Structure formats: structure tokens, C-alpha cells
Length: 129
Image 1: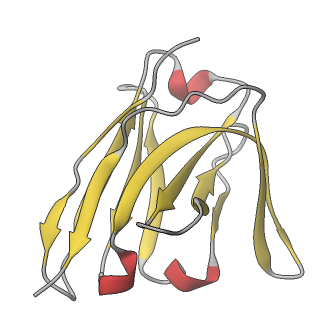
Image 2 (image 1 turned 90 degrees about the vertical axis):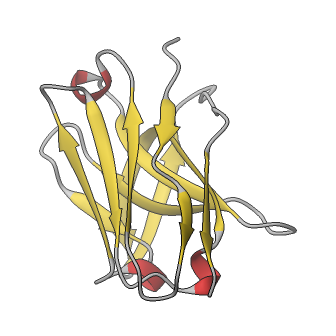
């Protein structure tokens, strides 16, 4: 089990941008896909975006489409989440984890986690003026 390490969070004003990183040795050559999740205080964890390691296809939940971009750097084994036009409702702790499947079902983002996924400490994103 290789630990995934998230970084790049911070405090940003509404409309601002942040780029999150998820890194681990061998991350981008793993069989599993890599997905970003977030959990706001008092709310359940939700899937945000995913990138398929097989072909680089990307998937996003409706609320972040057009604002967030997920990408990967296969040289540095890092997956990024570029977040633009941030809104207060994006405030949450963001995590990355391995996903068995990522797809769209009836145009809605759907995923299944890999068995026994590792959850790190995450990185806090706060969007506030």
C-alpha cells in the first residue's frame, strides 16, 4: 500500500484559483484510476473528479464542470486538480484516492472506490472573502 499525499490547499477569495497535487511513487502507472474527493464540515464525502490511468479520460461532478480540471504528470507520478472560479461552497478538505471505476451514468459522475482505499490527511481548501 503506497500512501497518497495531497498538497496545495489554502485560503482563497471567491473567484480565485488553486492547484492541488496528489503524489505517490507509481501513482500514474497503477491499474486503478485516481480520483479527488472532498468533505465539508457536517457533510458526507463526495467525489469531485477522476482521471483514468488507462487513457487519461477525465470525469467531473456537475457542480465543478467547467471550473475544475484534473490532469496527471506521468514523469513525476502526480495527479493535479486545477480549481478555477472557486466558490464558498467548494470549501472542504480535499482527498485523493484510487478508484476502481470512473464514468458518467445518465450524464452524472459515478465512481467506485478501489478495495481498501488509503485516505490521507487531505488538504484544506477554504474559499472566503
